[in-house]
Image (cartoon, rainbow, N blue to C red; front, side):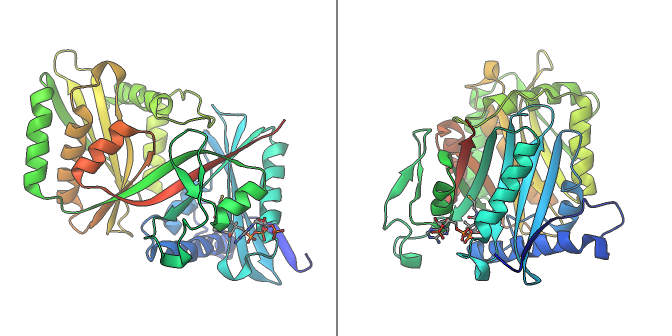
Length: 368
Ligand SMILES: CC(C)(COP(=O)(O)OP(=O)(O)OC[C@H]1O[C@@H](n2cnc3c(N)ncnc32)[C@H](O)[C@@H]1OP(=O)(O)O)[C@@H](O)C(=O)NCCC(=O)NCCS
């Protein structure tokens, strides 16, 4: 296609915010923001420029690359490749986004080819990408479900066949491994509901206490917290996606905390400790960005295997929601993502009042 250029976005350096060096980084952000506004009518799911400035520098755990497509000089699309460096080293996580006015001209195909070549050049053999779409009432936008649904290989959930993302992924040789549900909880939660759910959880959770922190785990708990973070990588349902056990230790926890802080992201963590042994049995994390005061993002929630069945997930979540309502009074909602086969987590979220907001196809292509 004449007039099309696809170039690597310079890796952001501290201090180059607002400068010419960061112009392509800002262009990619602008393309993503326009897409979020188009799909959701808000930027609740989008990262901020400050986060991008930190995230796209990469870390010792992930190399992260972005590319910008220009058509006759105009910003037309972006793609990215994330290369895990410690575990999952056969995999590359790929994203392709074409700005709405430039679709159906072959730019998506060209961007994907650049992303896949980059991944292959780093020895990756499994490409994975995800795509989130809002749940629409039947009949809207010509009814998403008119043309049927493609079931996920996981056996749970599916995506409408007539979406551009579905067509594009299938045309590019990807298979639908898994479907996640995104859900939204309006805040504040009815205090009577929280009291009732908490009383029920406490009745099942004898011998445990809730501890919490903001943004930085206390030194006395950080090793135990790292153990739970490792379990999180192995315990969530991931269907046929590449998901090797991640070795977490205190330096990895601190690296993540510091990276979030540099990116302007704060977190609230509620953890459940076994009173007898002091062992950490469960944790849940909410993140928030002062630049997006309306929204909290639900990050990890995990109850360690031996401690399941005591309503510890519910106990931790209630403590964190109460805390978030004090610390972030402007927040009007929490957004969360769960594998559609993750019945236990979904049941907790539904009883707290989360409602389905969207679905996310998790796509995979394995090279021979
Ligand atoms: C999906 C997306 C990247 C496609 O980009 P694009 O530049 O329009 O795609 P291309 O023109 O390169 O199309 C490549 C092939 O994908 C399929 N395809 C893409 N969009 C389609 C649509 N709206 N309807 C039917 N098929 C479509 C076709 O098979 C097409 O080949 P063809 O034109 O020879 O028939 C773009 O719609 C987009 O950015 N959507 C939002 C983000 C997203 O969904 N990303 C993909 C994540 S899986």
